[in-house]
Length: 51
Image (cartoon, rainbow, N blue to C red; front, side, top):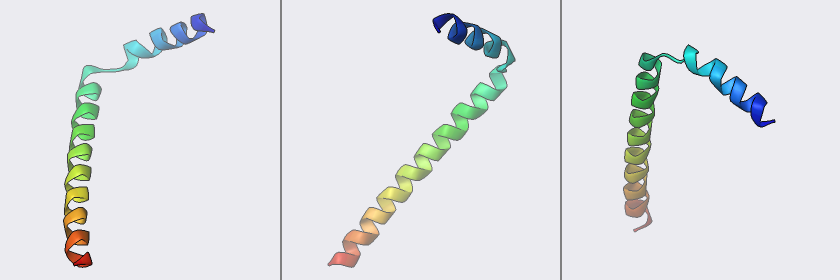
């Protein structure tokens, strides 16, 4: 089981390019920031709406 997982990992690693990793990290960061901002905005809107 561990040998299979290790072999799969080692066969996938050379196919991942550093540009893809950077792009993935950048897109994930942007997605997290947008999600956090929208949740703050919705929280404020709902708080004003309840009053």
